[in-house]
Image 1: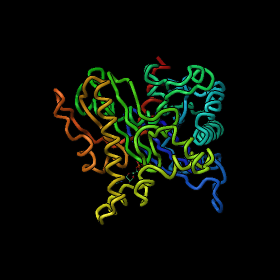
Image 2 (image 1 turned 180 degrees about the vertical axis):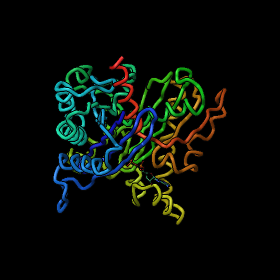
Image 3 (image 1 turned 90 degrees about the vertical axis):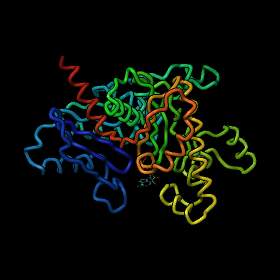
Image 4 (image 1 turned 180 degrees about the horizontal axis):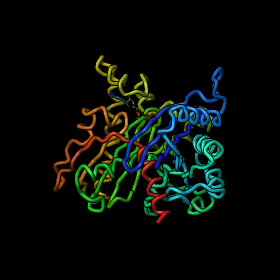
Amino acid sequence: MRILVINCGSSSVKYKLYNFRPFRLLTKGLVERIGEEGSPVKNHYQAIFTVFKRLESLGKKFGEISAIGHRVVHGGEKFKQPVLIDKEVIKEIRKNAELAPLHNPPNLEGILACKKIFPSSKQVAVFDTAFHQTIPQFAYLYALPFDFYKKYKIRRYGFHGTSHQYVAETSSKIMKKSLKKLKLITVHLGNGCSISAIKQGKCIDTSMGFTPLEGLIMGTRSGDIDPAIIFYLARRAGLTLEETEKILNRQSGLLGISGVSNDLRLIKEACKKGNIRARLAIEMFIYRLRKYLGAYILILGGVDAIIFTAGIGENNPDIIKKAVWGLEFLKKKPTVLVIPTDEELMIARLVYNKLKKKRR
Ligand code: ADP
């Protein structure tokens, strides 16, 4: 069975084609600069058509594509599992664009284009939020008037779900222990950063919330702040809501504190040269991470493994060492693992399992 995974962003499409049983990655690629000035790829339909042409040019050995797995960022409360895409699902993804205005619309463009260009392949949506749908209500609600949850769907959703799920499953294979018997903390540290507490294979809490802005300090996002800062900035500095939103999402985090970059490599270089703010940014990044680690160890009632992944998590043993320092107070010291994430492979596996179940 051939499964194509499509990750459709606002200006690029990433794709990977897999064979299942025996499992093999057959090819992968990227179509960039969608809709940009001077680019030959004017829209998402053309981008997917480019993918189709590239696959076709590889010849017959790539065969028929049975299914296409689409990464969709926001599944709201409705989607707790991957789903076969039909009219209702499309309607719901469109509705959830309200909650993820930058992500769901291009995801949907990709789905609609694939339906036309690959009409005989099954289309499956895999949601970034789905893995976190096991979080209990007392953990996913904010202490706001309850009506806000009912009326506006304001709650913690969490993101990076596919990545947290992938590294959790991989860690159980590495440790040769069933997920059902493990308490795990998974730490995704890329440009966006999030941390999840996973008990018996189920996510019980995660640091990103209603949007990806909450939680850890990230490349350009602030993570947790006192919400009253937003009102104060409006009064004191005359900032509009749009300006503050942009500052919190794009000019804060490692970039905002260091004044150097959002890229940890450059911040580390500056730090070596004695840049005090670069050093402070790294200290703050690690400190926030340790606060969450401490909290999650308590809610899990101990931890068997802490797993680091994504650009920062996979390449910075010095930071990991500082983040997990001092765990001797635990009865059993946890295993610390670094596992490269592979969201596309996780999506392909979920699609394969979904179709297998359907056939039974
Ligand atoms: P994204 O969330 O955009 O997928 P990545 O997972 O690629 O982001 O992570 C980007 C971050 O990882 C950057 O801060 C970058 O500095 C850091 N990073 C990537 N490779 C390395 C490396 N070899 N050494 C140190 N940091 C790295």
